Image 1 (cartoon, rainbow, N blue to C red):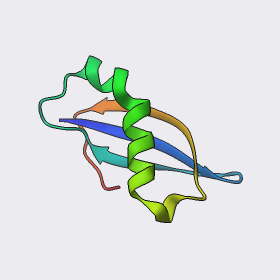
Image 2: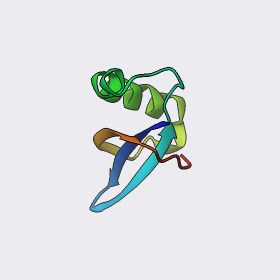
Image 3: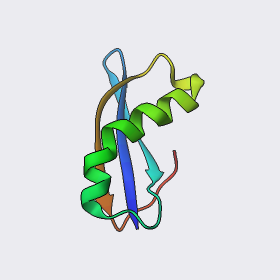
Image 4: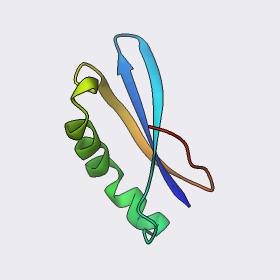
Length: 66
């Protein structure tokens, strides 16, 4: 199971949001599309509008909550 990890910052405070990647996604495809997936996730969650995306990465074997 792949997880997309977003690093979100508000001023100097940062946090990680973990969202499950689609089940058939390969690790390479996850890495190649991480930035676009992060932007789409933020657009779908207006409550995060003030947070800025600092980074995105894919992790294998871990699943968490958004």
